[in-house]
Image (cartoon, rainbow, N blue to C red):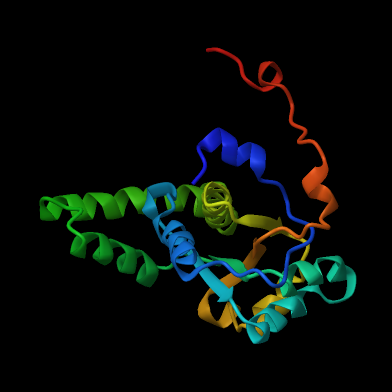
Length: 218
């Protein structure tokens, strides 16, 4: 287990995985916990995850790396685990009540009125993006990216390598896993595992803008 600074300095976008190394069941359970516990605006949780941990599953996800995205195919097939991050296309009333009822079951509301207040607050923010800014799907995708960031950090603290990939045929993944008929669409893919000794990117120095250039004291 690494501290945060060590983890962020250690991690990088893995270009080549060691196909012979697998993430332990215990460590991957920790990663799944991150997926479930990640924060989202108003706790809306508009995500779904398709996970492959064997050759057959990775071959299905690799269909999204054919053609112009074939440079990412090995990153899918050689990884230990691969996750497709999916976002809800719209947050319909049925889904909103599913979230609300789960919060109620989990004891989030000390009084019945607080449940209705939470529902109205969530609908208010959703309506701003749906009706005023007219970008509800984009807002939902933003929440999925919060989840992706949490996973990348969590993996690094466990010493697990990862690479996030937008370089995939997302429509092909939607079709392969029938996501749109379920109300979801693929957003990106993250492959996880352990770096190969031959991965050139592991030896390159990390490059980030300086603290002084990106942080201003209020």
